[in-house]
Image (cartoon, rainbow, N blue to C red; front, side, top):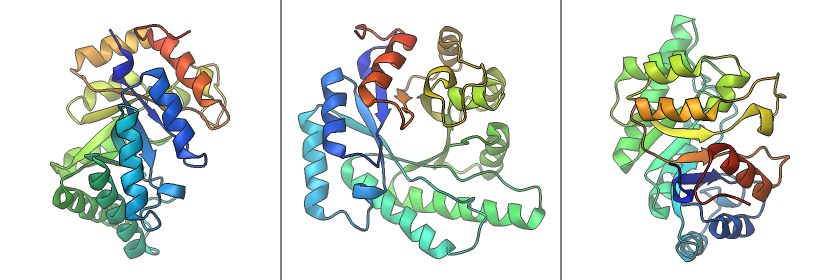
Length: 257
């Protein structure tokens, strides 16, 4: 059974944070994922702003599931790497101060080129060490890329501060096998999205694919996942509509609408 408190919602960094938090609190969800850009950019957010966010979360009886830092480039890209690393470190510090213990990034996947792969592995290890030093877990999202390749990299590094995010909607969109990915990565999975290309679009169109959530929930039970499910609305969809619709698809108790 999925209760509303087992839901998290990833909020839209291009929209005002406060009304979004009110909506999520009114819906009775238990947690949010915030993005460390826009008004939450760590270098721009004052101590007063940080206190205000903590207060808003407390008043809505909400926790921070994670702080996500969107990344436009693969971490093997050495251009301005020091600056990007500093941004990630600042995001980790912000996450800790806000009460989150997880930071999420989409690092891309390691290249087949040995030199690029070595850089990728080195950079990911650097970030994992930063997370460990800050007292956080660094969760890697595969995005539209191969989740199996990312799983392989995490196993090779075997770093205690590295984990994996599972996104059934994006796996369906890219034609990857959810059962295979989840089974192979079962002990690495720390966070699971509730996304569905049939409804969300995910920016690419549904391609006639959707997620069988009844089977997906059975699979998560089988691999021992006990965490929250994070709804990540497409930015073209109203937040309230997105959460209520995914709640119905997940058969959340008590029911939405």
